[in-house]
Length: 397
Length: 243
Image 1 (cartoon, each protein chain N blue to C red):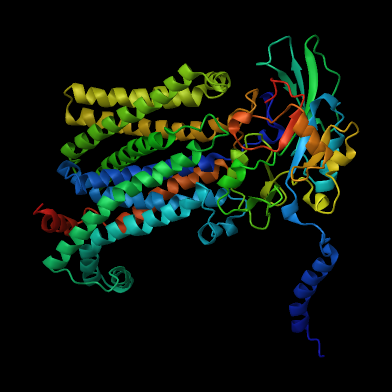
Image 2 (image 1 turned 180 degrees about the horizontal axis):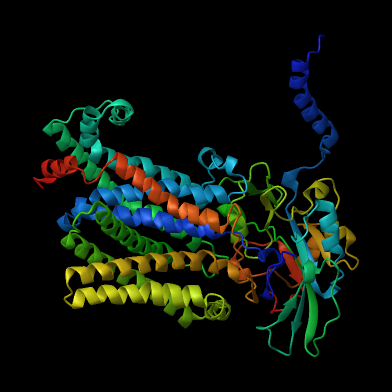
């Protein structure tokens, strides 16, 4: 009836997939947000000085992706105009109902506030040094707070520190919660797992760290600046550690499933060896996990020159982002390809031009980079004013 | 009244809305129905089903179910020998037009009608982010289509595959147990038309309901009991191969 190829038996309403590539993007993008923020917090809370050059960039990256995060959800809804009902009349037993609140909390109470406090001095200075519309823009951004005395900046710094401390569990909450939306569906054995939120958190850290690493290196190239090798080495090390934990957790989940071999196992095992073989085994595990892990391990074990390390980091970072995207794909799409009767499989047909089609997905993937570009233009993380700022604000740490 | 062109332009949309309401009519009231006096369930006697598909047709006609989607459907099982882990199941167009002759030899063949189980602990109502789907006080799982966001989380959460997104309304849709009928003392469209009495509505709050008495005194089973959803679609004569 739907013209979708089916193998074996599906319950008739299962033939059509309900959650499309846009729902793959949603955990992917929120993961990048959470990961980027956690990287930023390394510098602020855990005093990992080496990653300081990426601190502001990580925050802006997180913001750029967070702005885009609800868009795929909104486009996917049958009635987007009713989405505000989630705020007005949330159903408290629903895992999904809380997303709006978690999202708003994270956006307004954590990210925007932290960025504003960190940039406040720059904004005040820019509102004095620019002219015309720009001046007005920065004037508005100061929110009337133009006191940049050392005492005021000290207070900003302290508040920012507290917000980062609140922000770390919030970042875990944001993405662990996304994992819970899937992990708590008992009807679906591919999703239903208490490990799901934890796997989501670690994979988020992996993707966010990789994204900031790549953006930092790309921006340095574009600006003609020298890449701070101590910084990228440290980021790569954290990427490696987070990846090892993430991979171990995913393997634990896999081994547990294989050993327990419950009623769904044969059906899921068949799916992994057929329909999901390419995205799961080849792209996610081999290309997107084992390869970058091996490359990162090489940089830890073998002494390579700067250019060699940079190249390996760039390749590993790209593969990581592909691998984590494949992981989201395999969770969301894979979880809908098999029948809950465990007797058959359906097919996901992605349209090119459609409200939930490939073009929209590509546009939504690119959009955060445009937003990031605009944010970098408006709130430059590398201007001279920033250098002074770091020296004055953090010099005494 | 001086009817200017401008005024006419104001009045026309209002008149269209009013005419729409007139055409729609007022919903039939059920003044004698007291929700708290009932707790609806369903009995499906698998041993009686002949796979004619009349129930699927009746449901489609009564509830205006779009093509390719099913509020109820019928599955045909073939279990060779003792191997009930690997049944062969088919349900061409949900059994809407019955089934072609089986080419399977040996073993057993039987039909299993499926529909919403109207679970008392329904995972679908649990996950709805706005509470657009709910359990009525008389135990029927319903969807408010004027409130549903169309997020489809409920469709994912149903272990039995009973929900779908109605492409006309872009909202979740499912069996309502013909709520518009049962509140007027009628039975469901599928029960009404079933030629063999396979499908029967049951009031689990009514001790004198003969179907209730049947469930009380016979071995019945629900689908996927491990899901612990307190399903209220009871099956009599259900084979272990059915999932």
